[in-house]
Length: 496
Ligand code: SAH
Ligand code: SF4
Ligand code: F3S
Image (cartoon, rainbow, N blue to C red; front, side, top):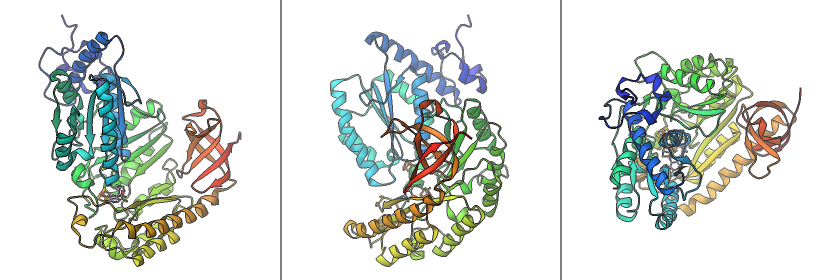
């Protein structure tokens, strides 16, 4: 009689172990999370199975990620759900189910999505069973939803960033009804734990420690599409890290738009430095990374914790955005050029082997060639190991989009090139300091261009390519850094 499992009676810890084929989907779904979503995964599983039997082949699902590390982590959740629902993972965008996890931080991210949707449409015409889904940051913009409804009627499922945990339920509704499903939430204070995850790498993983952002930098759309800042409880985070380590993970990256303000909305008195101290204690964990640090909130305590740590990587991503105090003010970054330089140089002094990387925007409204010079001056003083340089992109709804003195793209190009050149020159100078040294490298993958080489990372995040084979993936090996090629090295394993 109790051959069927009723999810309402299952403890949270047991959820991931149960046989979903035995879940009773004829009773009503549980009304609490994440049990409710496991119920819908079980239901999808039945539908996927019968469709696959009908076609006499497996059903494939392809998850495509645009944007940042946080989206990459969300995609691992989507992939985990799809796999449990019975789909076979595929990298081929002609799969039976294709989902785009979108980004809207700059307009070119949106344009890429629209371009590729055209291709998906032509695929769908050849395979009418194909289902197409869109989720992620772009979907939180009303104008995008309007455009998709109007011009991309072939999309079957649309949801946003706040209800991503509801993916199984929405997928089930779509499969069952055969109709288009759209569900977008304006905001949420919910954090749903313990959904299935399919990691891209066996040995490293991102972990969300917080969601959303409260900073409202005037150019940035993220606070509008990701909502207010919410931190996960340290208990949940540490439990997740422990599980990952048991599963073979040696490197974690703690993810948040501004990790330095971690813990502010929690009842427990915990800050980011405190969380790092606890993570450090987890046995078997070798490397801890984090992203991103807002300069205004970076504490001396964090520098101290990094300095003392054996596991926290020698890398700090410290977005500058602009070197002009006037522009920084208009950007609402809440630090001056001098404060930023003092902070960066203090970090270099305290932790001499650290690599500092950054993000820079060129072409913010009102930016003059003199402002660009200020940015170049900061680059020359800090000498970043690497920097992402972006041309300002006007995002509708942000304060900067309404500013009058927008700089024409033509005028931006010259400053952008100069910034880029300065970054390249100073980075080469910094990265070359390691020439000849033997340092531990976590081996990540086979080199894409030359299959006789493996690619890994130093603690300071610099890429190293060296002769080796796939058996090394996930291992930490000592490599002699032989040739500096600007941002990366060619090296050779040494057997000490
Ligand atoms: N939370 C992170 C950044 C997330 S977005 C932080 O504050 O550092 C990643 C980067 O995209 C930003 O650092 C910024 O350099 C860039 N960016 C954000 N909005 C942009 C815009 N409207 N135009 C161009 N670049 C932008
Ligand atoms: Fe955007 Fe600023 Fe928040 Fe970063 S800190 S996500 S740049 S608003
Ligand atoms: Fe893009 Fe959203 Fe990340 S807008 S940068 S995917 S938070």
